[in-house]
Amino acid sequence: MIQITIAALKKARTLLGRLRFAQCKLPVLNHIHARVGGSSITLAVTDLDQRLETRIPLPATPNGPTEFLIPSEALTTATKADKGSSVLLHPTGRRGHRELKLVSISAGMRIESMHATADCEDFPQRPVIEGTDTRLPAATMAALQVVAPCASTNAQRHVLQSVFFSPEEGGMLIATDGKHLAGAPATVPARDLILPTPAVKVLGHSEFLKREVIITLPRDSEKNLAAFRAGDHLLISRTIEGSYPNYRQVIP
Image (tube, one colour):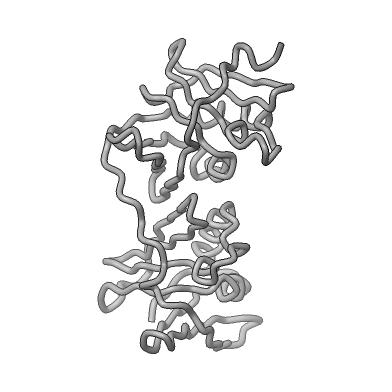
């Protein structure tokens, strides 16, 4: 079995909840992918446009590497365990008949539950991004949250449902809905990118806000992806294709 402290699990759930994976229509996406290696476990969720991962140190080293899926409702159940306790996860079964045994302590009593899961082989693979790294200081992440409220919420203005990273004028972050516009100077990559609002929301979590973030853009500019790494946390997001409007002329 894999043992995880409740404190670490709750912290991970709060971060992963920034991505609304539990509302995805594809059942396998309603799960958290767990990969155990060495003395840590990496939990990952995705909605196909964004993938969010967090690594948790384990209090006890498991017998060997393994991977399995955790249904979102099982994670909710696990985090209801008593404060200061730990949860045991035991994946069982074969392909097509996978289950997860969950053991926790609630109100001082040992609780065991079984949860049917999807096959981890069906969970989307992590995209591979090979390219140039840029270090973004905490000030850039703070500026991102300052300008983001001006992004459009109109689904028909897809390209404006984003924040624009521009290397012009020494680096700028721009967001507009066509009526309001916010801009802030910031350290950004040497190449333009348009980051969708859901990814900006994830980056608003304290685990990304309080430290330096490394952004990686693929060498192939046609590959619309960006990776943001902060300590043990990783966000990979699709970027928006197309050209961002000339923000100097968006508002007459």
